[in-house]
Image (cartoon, rainbow, N blue to C red):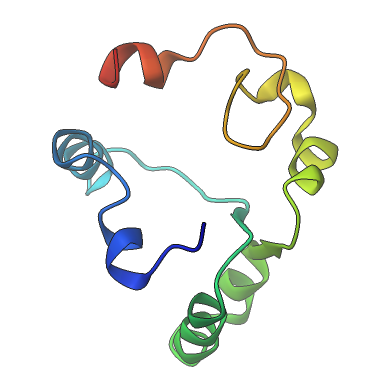
Length: 103
């Protein structure tokens, strides 16, 4: 099913989004190596081209669009993907995020 712009903004539950904001804003120095976007709608690609004017070339190279979910397993390995995670065929038995926030 296709996801619209507003559905994308509300992808995370409010409680989880607030915790992620508190965790990452000015507190946790992390470096993003790659951001993988799977089966992105057309508006997302157009939005990223627009944002490319404001982002560095290095940052734009870190954003990777994947056409099919099968490509994720090839990149990360199925052992890093939880079982029953959307269309992905993962083999990881335990998912910390699901246990903590969705059960």
